[in-house]
Image 1 (tube, rainbow, N blue to C red):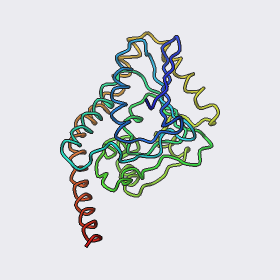
Image 2: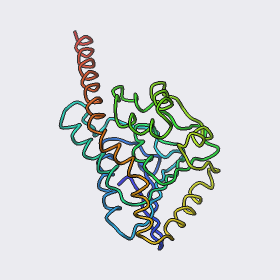
Image 3: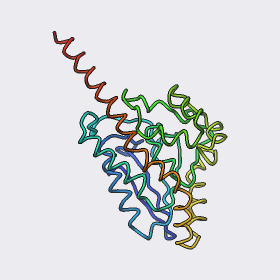
Length: 250
């Protein structure tokens, strides 16, 4: 399991993602694992608010190809089904502790949260590189969510130029809600989580549903098309890699 879970009596659940105790390496295996993890969290009515945090010096800043099948219709069907479940079916409030914000390729998990926090002394910011990290990320839902959060023109520039936003710019653009000292980050997340957990259960639950309805609709309507574009790009990458391999062995 790539997550450590601890819950307070008021229903605030802290979920720390990790790989061998350090910062998380996101890959196909964790992608599949998190589907079951967040489904189980959402089904437990004792979980009122979820604090999603990382381990070490980053929340999530690397992605690996292990466990993904980028080059077949069956592989993309699996990615689509898993991604829709994580993005659309989680009913609890989520607060993200962004020690160093993860790459844009996993934006859906974080942008649909209630509050996002960034350490004020972070050297790294909010990078757009992940859209091209595996060389075929033409879609991957970054095209759906980032323009919605930071604006259409900014979103396109951010993704295509692989721009990095510093913490203050991220706050000014609405990517994060607060910038706080790193040593206060998790404590501040718990403070906000406690205030949400103090609300009547149905009030907090249905307020979140109302606030995320638009983003959920955007993901629902655009995920299939976005993944289809990525699949075409991935097939081209696979073809080029095969040609290069044959040329080297000739």
